[in-house]
Length: 62
Image 1 (cartoon, helix red, strand yellow):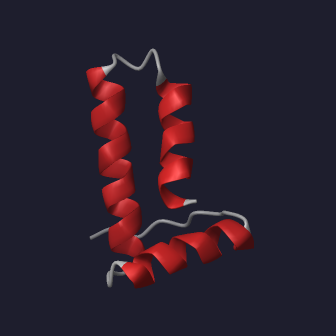
Image 2 (cartoon, one colour):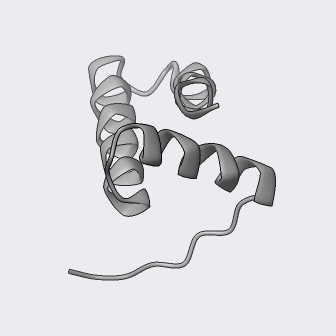
Image 3 (cartoon, helix red, strand yellow):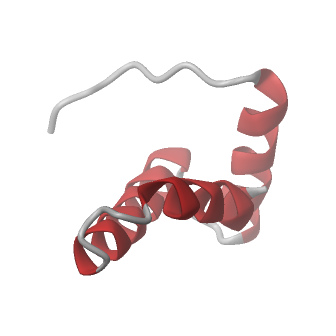
């Protein structure tokens, strides 16, 4: 499995960690699932609502 480096504000990462801990899963697993969900929505909407979907992704975590 490949590794990537992602930069995000500390406060946002704290929220990610809270959700991951609440769901008893790793940070990586949570982020992978969030990205899968985002990509499914973008594909279904032909990417014309990509901005809305990105905001929805932020709301899922925060």
